Every structure is written in structure tokens, then in C-alpha cells.
Length: 315
Image 1: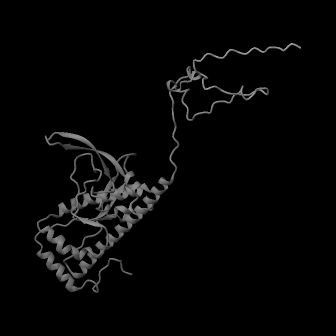
Image 2 (image 1 turned 45 degrees about the horizontal axis):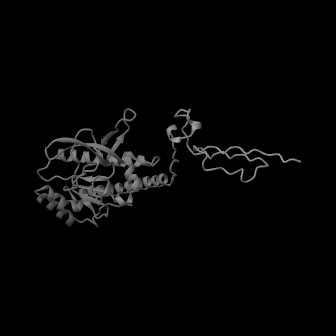
Image 3 (image 1 turned 30 degrees about the horizontal axis):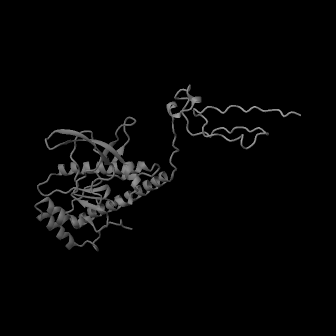
């Protein structure tokens, strides 16, 4: 059974290849390549994706200022498919330096994400498939550098989401970009870019079918990896949300208690986690209900009532 994205003479004819060849040869600008040639390769898949969007919401890859990535094309996931708790948990505070209207630099703290690349909420999340194209005047070196930077951001996003749901099965050997564990505990991981293949698409119709099929199959595989990682992370977020919150504890300082019995205790001795009920006063068998009344003036400055004298009746 051929791969799902495979092309054959039945769905990509010699005439289709001739059209692709002419458009590629006639392209003068990078936009011509992306607009005319790329649709032949891209395929008709309904994956969330965007073109020429700046990744302005990702956690910086290094501690030094770096230009935000802007892929020519990328595939991602629908942000609504990801549990909001997952999105919140995969954000951190980042310090950025900006210039005010007087060109004076100052530092601000902003919230950045590992998996939401753009501040615009409608753009796809979790990007893990990218394309960089160059026109006749472009260089392969620049395209390779841009592709490497995009791929590292995508690999990091998938790594963060997979680690959010521990135990998920991983297949890093298939990644074009993959990570290696840091050399020291708590250090940064190492990122690797691996060449899977190179295809001369304009060489022949068979070469085009082979290259375009590999491209389309990788798009499908990347979509499956996003779906699996999101499902695992959402399941963990649901479990965390279902857990009861921790019970609160309260501490009272002796000065706030106002109880003479605790006046000599230290702050540690007087710390309580709950309020105890006052002890009940024992009643003697001969006491009447009136004798058992407790006045609201107990503890006030009122003078105590003088004791009543019992007079023995003469017999």
C-alpha cells in the first residue's frame, strides 16, 4: 500500500510536471516560487497553517537578543484543541528590554509561551512543520539557517508538550529536528538537525513525485504527532484540574488572640490551624437551670454579685 501522500502518474501526470517545471524556471522572485510552484508540492490537506507570520510570543531560545522567526509556511494545531491549563502551564515570565519614546531603554516582564507562537489568538499553535523557499537570487545557506532555526523552535515546542504528559511514547529517530539530554542536570538540551533526503524536483516527473510524496507524508506525520501530544497533555490537565485543592491553614499571632491564657506563649506555641470549641462547664446535680446561666458580662469589668447567705430556719 503506497503512503497516503504518495503521487503516481494517475494523480500527477506528465503535463502537471511540465507546468511545474515552467513555473519554476520562470520564477524571478521568492514570492513567485511560493505562489506558483509551491502549490504543486504542498498538497490539498486541511491542516491549520499560516504564511509569513512572525513568531512574536515564543520564549526566547537564547539569553541574548535574537530575531523572531518568520517561516514562509508552517503547519500547527488549532489553539482551541489544547486545554487552557496546558497553555498556562507552558508559559513563563520573560524580561525584555524596550525603548520608550525618548529612546531610553527599560526592562519589562512579559508572559511568553513555549507552544503558542503568535500573540494573535487565531493563528495555529504548536508549530512543527515548516517550509523555507528561496527565489533565483536567494542562497541555500540562508534558507538552511532559517529552516534550522524554525525547526529547533518546533522541536522544543513538541518536547515541552510531550514532557507535560510523562510516559508518552516517543520516536525521536524520525524527527528532522531532535533533542539530546543536557550534559548537566538542569542544563539546556542539545538540538540536532538531520538531513532526511534531497530531491531535484525539476529533474523528472518521477523525481518530483518522489520528493513531493515525501513532503506530503511528513506533513501528515507531523499532524499526527501534534494530535497525539495534545491529547496526552489535555488528559493530564483534566486530571490535575479534578484534584481537590489543598486545605488552607491559618496562623494567629498572640497579640491578635486577646486571651489571657495565651499571654505567656511564644508565636510558635500560639500558632493554630483551627479554632477549638470552648470547654463546657460541669453542672452539679442540685444546680437549677437559673444557676447554670452564663452572663454575657463574663470577662468584663462589672463587679461580681455578692454571695447570698443561707439562713437556717428555726425549728
